[in-house]
Structure formats: structure tokens, C-alpha cells
Length: 236
Ligand SMILES: [Zn+2]
Image (cartoon, rainbow, N blue to C red; front, side):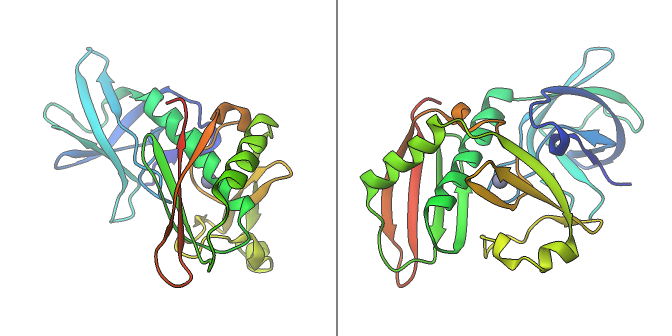
């Protein structure tokens, strides 16, 4: 049975109750979760699980199960956990919220560069995108344009389309290195109102104003047709 992915419906859920489905060494599969698994350049969530008798297990990382059975919550130790146990899940919200702000910020960056994305990564305080691009954009110009999009407060919303609808609109796919999150014939589109529309399985803020001031870092020349644009959130 697959894990129900509550973070897709509500990225702001900080706590929920779930049941243990299986224990795999130091990792646990649950019937539902608010923990985002590493993917699309966004790190896996950390946090804790608490039993009804107030025992705590630390979640040090979250990954997709390589056997395809759902989402693995990686623990420092699974000792004492049992199948069918009911647990309260809590994510490290400050860390996750920073990832949401940074992730949404990368959508803004993507919208400002007319070139395919070849890679990307998010850490807690920094982010980067690699573009298939043969010139380096002007750093100050880019910084003022991205901050204008933040300040304008564009709402972020979601809609689902079928795999066939996506195949009919290949222009929607901006990222060459990450395949859109397909599943059960449906793909989730993330719409930053009037700015960016693309398939994405990550977690985002509800409004670009939540990102706060953005600082463009180094623009690196990584060889022919490859520019790496680094950025950081001014308030983390
Ligand atoms: Zn995204």
C-alpha cells in the first residue's frame, strides 16, 4: 500500500496522525505523511514521531522507498516501533518553510531566464539552478527583477492534468534533468499566477511575498552552454 501524501494537498500541515504500515531496519513506512521525501532538488524533511504513550523517534531524513512502497521516514533508531502503532507526526517546520520559500523562489528565477533548466538544488539557506545558456545574465538586473516578482505577491495554486494533456504541451516542461511527477495518469501543475506554470511535485508557499528579499549570488560559467545561477534568501 502506498503512503498518502498529505503535503501535496496542504504544504502548510505541520502535524498529523498516522499508522505504522511497515518497519524496514531504521526506517518506517506510514499510511499517510506530511514529511516531504527528497526529490526535485528539494531535501527530505526532518522532524519527529510520537507514540500515544509519549515516546519519541527522531526522523533524520525522508526518502522515497526504492521498492516503490511509499515514503520512508529514516530514523536514528526504530527500536520500540511496532506495526499498526498510531503516531503523531511533526515536521521541523522552520526548516521546511525555508525550503518552500526557496523552492518557490526558484520558480521565479526559472521564469526570468529563457532557457531550459538542466539541474538544480536547494539547501536550507541557498539554492541554485543550472541553465542551458551560452551567456551570463546581468546579476543586478536579475536581482531587481526577481525581487519585483516577490514584492508583487503573486498567488501560487495547483491544478491537475492528465499525462496525455502534458504530452500535448511539451513547452510546460522546463526542467530537462527532472521528470515531471507522474502518477496514476495525473500530473500536478504549479501555477505562480501570471509568472510560471510547470509540473512540479515539491512544496511551495501560497504567495510569492512570503519568500522575502532575495540575493543573487555567483553566476558561474560551468562550460559550454551551462550557466549556474546561485541565490540566497536574505532572511532565513
Ligand atoms: Zn516547484
